[in-house]
Image 1 (cartoon, helix red, strand yellow):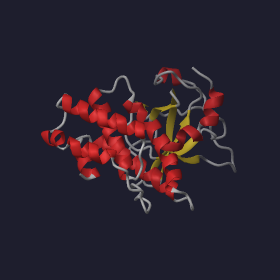
Image 2: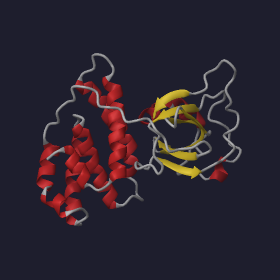
Image 3: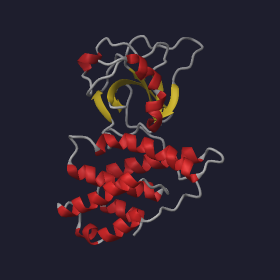
Image 4: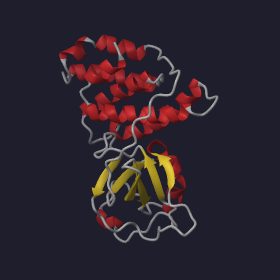
Length: 261
């Protein structure tokens, strides 16, 4: 049983594609550091990937099927890249049984479930070279306003611009955080999270809308008014480059000073 065979049988192209892109992109970046051991790369990859995808896997509004498919997909994608997390694998094995119990997928998946489980239980083979990075592309557009879940709070951001040929968006965070996705009324006349473009980030990996991980939610399109007070000063940087998987770390200082709303 090959990893791609398992992923194909899950019949969840959006979830699988999103996970593969996240894990491949972040793994390639972590393997680029000279002298890093496989264990160090694994430690750097698994937690941020799991943090992002928990937005789907633990979402009360997500269907049981999406959650079960998500756990199997996550364990398979990690295993394909040479990684193993015992908790993820345990959830995936249980999810295989749940998918079969509710006859969600094909007869072929049910027949080959023992082989799927054997693959996930086996020791993964560490990669000997960096995986190919997925092409940088985004489906967000200038004027989009999105909610992004970070550290169990919801933050709003306005898409200012696109870098390159629709490679990734440059977003600016509004001040404050919320217990759920904010409304546009809550964002009216709200300032930027930091002055002088300090809350502007170019976010690689902020690609899909709708977001298969449910971390990012579109609030509005073609919204002409960004958060006020965030324009850069002459001679200062225009924005900070980061990755969607590292966004919780990159914005930690903003979130620590923003306060709840």
